[in-house]
Image (cartoon, rainbow, N blue to C red; front, side, top):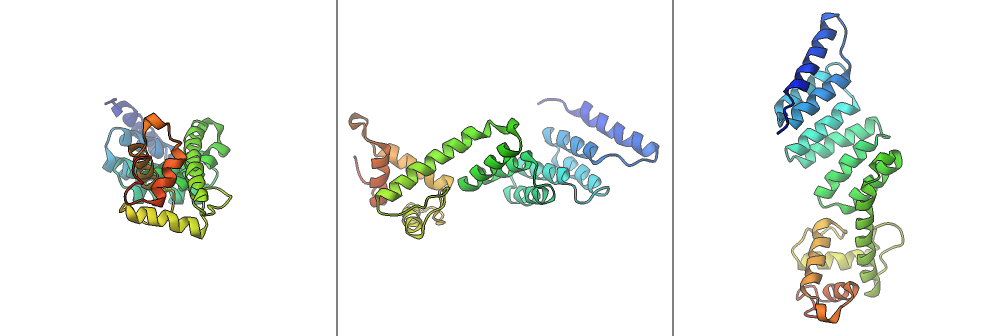
Length: 228
C-alpha cells in the first residue's frame, strides 16, 4: 500500500499554520486530508477530519462527497448514497458527484439510475467521457430486453429504460420465477440472470440469435425454455 503519511502530515501542518496566524483553514484542506486517510484505510480518522471541517462549514458539498467515498470504502452503500445525495443537493453541477452516485446505483443493481447519473456526469464534464462506454453497454442491455418484451406482445415504452404496465408485469413474472427481488426493472441481478440463463440454454451449433433465446426464456422462465 502506498504511504500517505507524508501527505497527511503536510495537511496537518497546513492546518496548524492557519491556526497559528489566527486564520480559519479552507475546507479544501480538510477534504484533502480526509481523502488521504481514506486511501490509507484509516476510515475513522477520515471521518474525524470531515467532522472537523464541518465545524467551519457545516453544509459543504466537498465534505459530503468525501463522506460518501469513505462510506463506500467501508461497504456502506446506504450511507454513501445519503451523503452523495446531499452533496448533489448543495451543488448540483459537479460531475464527480453524479459519477459517485452512479457507481453506488450500479453496485445496488439499479442500472437505470447508474446510466442516468453517468450521462449527467459526462454532460457536466467531458473528462468523465470514459463513463460513456458503461452507459452504452447498459443501453444495449435495455434495448435487447425491451425488444424481447415487444416480441412477446408487451409495449416496453419508447423513452429510456422505463416499462409500460404490461411489460413491467412480464418482467415481474420472470423475477418471481427466478427468486429475484421483484421490482419489474432492468436491474443488474435480473439482467445477469437473464443473460446467464440465455448462455446456458443456447446451442452454439445453431448460432441462435440471443433475442430468440431471451424470448424463449421469458415465455417459459421456470424451465429456461430448454435447448433452442
